[in-house]
Image 1 (cartoon, rainbow, N blue to C red):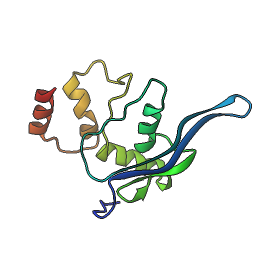
Image 2: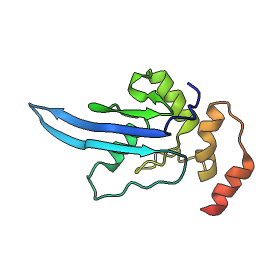
Image 3: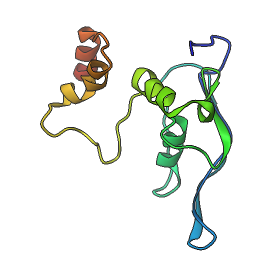
Length: 136
């Protein structure tokens, strides 16, 4: 699953995520979203509380599966990847800062940020880590 240089970085087509059932009541958190991001960068998704921002990000990162529609990352449809493939992709290509943080309280901020790379057996670029923490 290598990078496809001709493909968009990430795109969503008619993305929808509904929770619940006809018995319990349905809530549509994301409804018909289309988006396209062509290259890496810093992007923001803004909106009112409860408008589906976190759900959209979870769908774009493969943490959740859409009820309808598709998410494509570097030419691969995330819904067609196995859980293991999506986990590997998140480990290697995505970074998260959750609303409720999900940090390990016994680690400092730097160690929390670098832990996924360490667990994956990757090599840390300490100058980039220093740059990141200098920017914050």
